Amino acid sequence: MSESPVTHESPIYRRIADGLRARILSGELRDGDRLPGENALMAEHAIARATARQALAVLVNEGLAVPRRGSGVYVRLFKPIRRHGSRRLSREQWGQGRSIWDADTRGRAYTVDRVEVTRERAGEDVAAVLESAEVWVRRRRYCIDGRPVQLATSYFPAHLVEGSAITLPETGPGGVYARLGDLGTPPAHFTEEVRARMPQPREGVLLDLPGGTPVIAVSRTAYTAGGVPVELNEMIMDSAAYVLQYDFDA
Amino acid sequence: MSESPVTHESPIYRRIADGLRARILSGELRDGDRLPGENALMAEHAIARATARQALAVLVNEGLAVPRRGSGVYVRLFKPIRRHGSRRLSREQWGQGRSIWDADTRGRAYTVDRVEVTRERAGEDVAAVLESAEVWVRRRRYCIDGRPVQLATSYFPAHLVEGSAITLPETGPGGVYARLGDLGTPPAHFTEEVRARMPQPREGVLLDLPGGTPVIAVSRTAYTAGGVPVELNEMIMDSAAYVLQYDFDA
DNA sequence: AAGTGGTCTAGACCACCTT
DNA sequence: AGGTGGTCTAGACCACTTG
Image: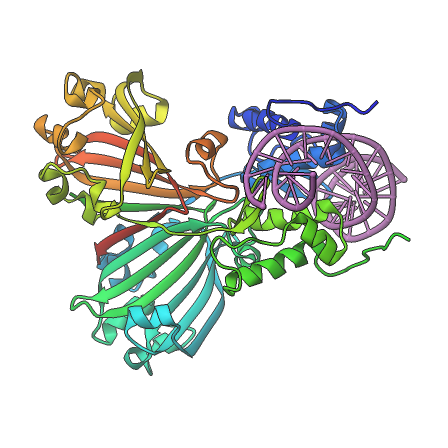
């Protein structure tokens, strides 16, 4: 009595996923609501466990749902931070002894952890951008409301920042950009390259990303007014946590 | 004689995926190379078909591999277009009767299809941005080398563009921005919001996206020198096809 | 203790692509 | 024709969370 599917339409698991997606997008199922579980789908549609799992996996991979072991599958929420690309890096920000990060968070509690400051031989790409074979590297992770949202790695030409607070875990008021100013090489021009992709396993762990969450990879190079590169900052952001904003004129 | 897994380490499928990923990232397996198939993995690791599939699904969902029905699973290639955010929208571009798009593609063959121009009642968000309840809407798809890479939807306040070439499929030399100039409301200032997420099913189909490919969603608002919003452009880009570049000063 | 998702086996039939 | 991935069934045991 094995039922042959014999369907020329879309597969069962996809039709089930479509139905659940519609209920999420229509607002019938809201942020944090529990979806029908594997057992419920098996009973409701008379399908095998693997097929029910496959349907739920579609939504998880689309970033619309998040599974919680032993509990259920839940509608995912999306509350991004607005990150201003141009406005935030104006001298007014870091000139007054404030960290750039303040411009983003609008008062939400943020923390920095996993700070590592090392002196390294630059990789090929980094060396090409900074025109320096030896670099100081600052790695750290940013969290908002206790949740990790961004990994950042900054590279500085070693000969430029040697002996400055940039080589220390604590960089002092105004952060590294203020220190670059102290060194007589304040950043004046920035270039940002923005990509999106799925996270590497390490990134997924460090950012505590559920399945189906891409990362935004931003590569920012800072130049002095004379066009000398003084910093390369590679950022990996949880795409569910960020909206990047850029303002410019024609 | 069923072997109990009894493993406190990572699951089998994940270890297999890790191994394959390492071979891809190390360059042992290169762009377009064929990965070991389901049958090969079953034999090599003495596992069931579903487990082999699960291992390959990890790589597909990470965007590192692409399955081809009846053929195999292949290492994916990544050759993005560089899209300049600020430079490309300078007046020099569209002032000379050239389309903005030219600045991106650097001579690569591109086409536009699925052009739809309609007059519509604006949705809530669009109406709020454009300060207009009625809008002209221009939808189209961009392809490079015959492959779709971007979906775009532009909204214009109806009262502003009524009767102009902006309401026609063909907008003439310089595109819609030149026509806005003809109307006495040339765009002078732009704001772009950049997000990343997994595609909706419709987007995945129209962009022909393989699994594990996020989209970059860019929302651009164009304002006149007087601060009047004249266009809202919602773009959905294949993240494997684009690098966005923004340049700005401190 | 019961329910949930996570992993895995051992089959099966199908559509599709390559040879 | 034979191999490939795509879908599906019908079980099983596990770890985890919740009541």
